[in-house]
Image (cartoon, rainbow, N blue to C red):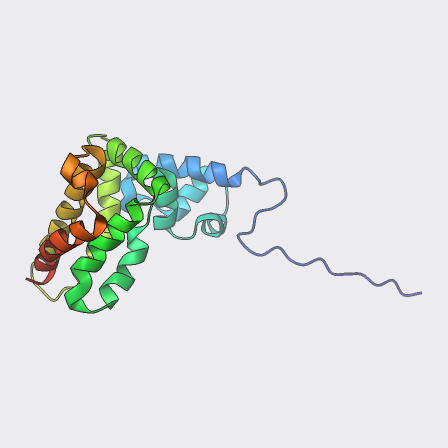
Length: 202
C-alpha cells in the first residue's frame, strides 16, 4: 500500500508564524524607538524590524509602508497623504475647494475629531512629536503637493497651504472660537478655499 503524503504549504514570506501573535505590538514598540531616535526620514523599515527581532517582510505584512507604520504609531486619525493624489488629479480650478472640504468633512466624524484633537495637542510644542510630525507631513504630503505644481516656489506654496489648514484646525477644534466652531462646513469651504487655491496657483 502506497502512503500518500500531503505536502504542507510553505509559509508565505512575511506571514506571522504560530506564536508570533505579539509581533505587531513588538513592531509598534520598535517603531516608536526608531522614529524617536532617527526621526521620520532617518527611520527605516529594516531598522525597525531589527529592533523588533523580526524579518522586515513581517513589518510590511502588518503595516505596509513606512508612512502607514508611522500613522499607526502616532494614532493618526486620517491619512491625507493617501487622499492628496486623488485630490490633485481632479480639475485644477477645484483643488483648493477639494482640499478644504476633505479636511473639514473628515473632522466632522466624531472619532476622527477626538483623535485629531489629541494628536494636535500632543504635537504642538512636544520636542519629540513636533519634529516627527513635521518630517512626515513634509515628506509624505507637502512634497507631493509641491511636485504637482509648475512653479519655482512650489515648496513655499505647499507650505502656505499647510499654514491655512493647520490654523483652521486649531482655531475650530482646539481653541473652538465660537463663530468658527459653529460655522457650517459649506460656509467655511466657500470662504477658505479661494485662499488655498491662490496659494497653489495664484
